[in-house]
Length: 384
Image (cartoon, rainbow, N blue to C red):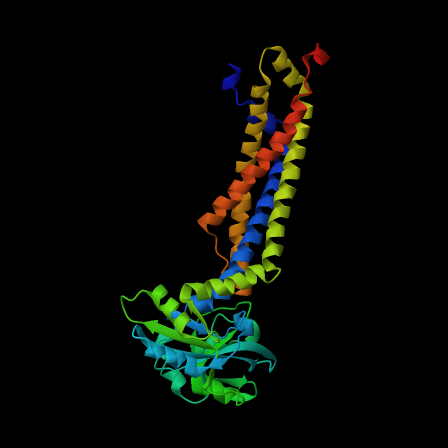
């Protein structure tokens, strides 16, 4: 029976060069969509890694703060005011400062983020920080982010080799006492962690009385959302109170909605979708045109248009599946290349694979549906 014959597959493989070109085009569309989505998620993840790694339940910010890159200070007294709440266990001021790091090898300078806090507090859940808090108690001693961009110099390699590393931050001499891992982000290409007193030493214009972020730990078993609500009632509006989850969302929302980044990557994904759809449509339309006489013959034999449409759709599904596989495989290599070259958290996720594969299916099916119109032109009267 004709139904037992893989007609769609036979039509595709009959023109092998055309099939290869079609698969290459679909793979290109898959790569374009997957890379755009990967870049977008990697950049957003990097932007909030600092926020997500904080060991805190509640965060206080200045109402003028819009992002970590443009953070504003507020009075430390506002943070200590929260200590009076019966559910609050501890508070910790956090100091941020952007300083110029001098590459000890090339002497070139590059901006990085300096993070300061009381070393007696476990502020960060990051590899290398907890074990080295005593180190940064020393004057002008810092921890260097080993995931910083290479333009800062071979600091990580030197420290691991046992070499004493000294450099300058904003003109002040510092010693690298150890390494930790945070990674580059929108806000900074590199990071240092040190004590709150060392931050003030690096920038004498600052004082401990003005802080950038206030961290609040609540007692075990307490409803954090309820404490957030009560603290918002306490403060007169000169301080923003956020849960840790809201703090992460606050930063990500800025980069998604207040910048062109989200739009650019979404547009790139859409362009990949459109490019792939055009390529598949051209292939299917040409294939139908080349076999128009055969389609007309099938109609004359009594096969309904519905069957002919199903053949075109089968071709679309086959192209989607075969084109996705090489595109996905190439993306795995490209993701690794980007991660090694930029230090961005570029990882393949199951959700992204499902999303891109779904888009690929839709792309091919829509193209097949448009190409079906050519099947309607297969008139047996024109053949016989």
